Length: 254
Image (cartoon, rainbow, N blue to C red; front, top):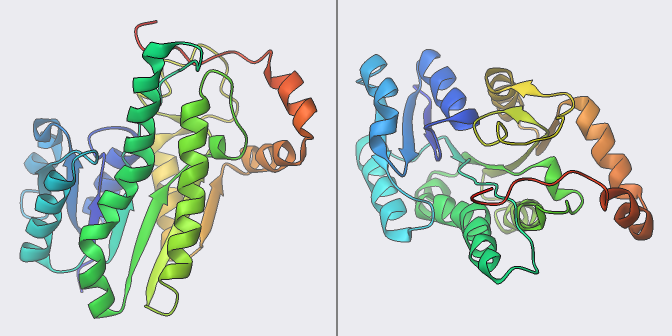
């Protein structure tokens, strides 16, 4: 049977590579972007199997429409990737950055809920499927100047844990992906060294393998996984001291 996959945030980065690799393998793939014209590459190369969907994970109406179209054409997906996400520098002391906090949390956390929810009834009825959430090693400890992003990714990890327990026994697997630094347009603006940077194509192929293997959590690359585990063991006072000197992600407009 042909694999059916739904991916949010497919116009660039990890989402683009996930969609491309699944399509090259013969899968049917629904791909969302806020601007569907940015998905023309897929329509031109796989017109019969790439379903291009203009949808914004911050808007429940557009996500429901995208899901309903996919369900009507292809039935319940085998895999749903909540991949769409944003990262913008922020400072709590600045009132204008409150909107940035709200946008990041709405996109990276509630957007994940809006991605999964429209498919759950059909997947539960069938009794199988995989829900894959893209979090980050940034969710392991708070990052100065990117506290909203860190908070959103920590929340995503805990949300996926709770969802996994909710769906226990339903036949639906919930998988958490925690990348380190991946070479994408989102990380290209970072004005600091990014150790163990992984090409987006390699990141996507590793994610696909981990999902095929039914790993409940996949953290990569292994070097950043080890660093993340060590950071998690740091006493709070030492973490605050060390990271107070860390370089900051640019704020919007910087």
